[in-house]
Image (tube, rainbow, N blue to C red):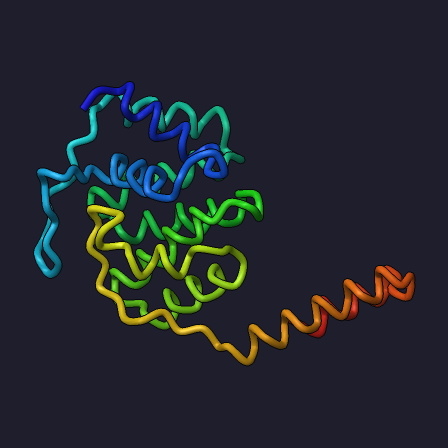
Length: 197
């Protein structure tokens, strides 16, 4: 694998709205150290991923220069997960979720998948369910993960509380109508947000 391949992968991850989901998941696989000729069966101890030292050094340098970059912490998490350092990877993914823009689904996706992989099924299900309510296509991507990625994940069906989802959508629509009619002020919107928490 050439370092240029990692540059392309990081570009895809940095601009996820410009690429199809399959290419973004392929970028994740690249940093995890997965390739199509290196299957990773479930239930077996994996050897640490073979990522070039130059890539590891570059990512560490970038993390020092740009500690507020969610994408850098996402990549660090992928590298750690690829080396079977799950606890450290979970920490990096959680930090990436915190630092990333709300329109970037990747850190929360990785966090949820790893939570499930290490047996934190309730946490992983909640993380992925929350993500499902924010982004179209996540449910299908989760369902088709076996075909879209080289990564095996021990998981069950993704459960979403449909009643809660419908209530949240109805409240959002109601708030939009009030706003359009000029009846909603900042206080109304703040109260709605508090009600949801």
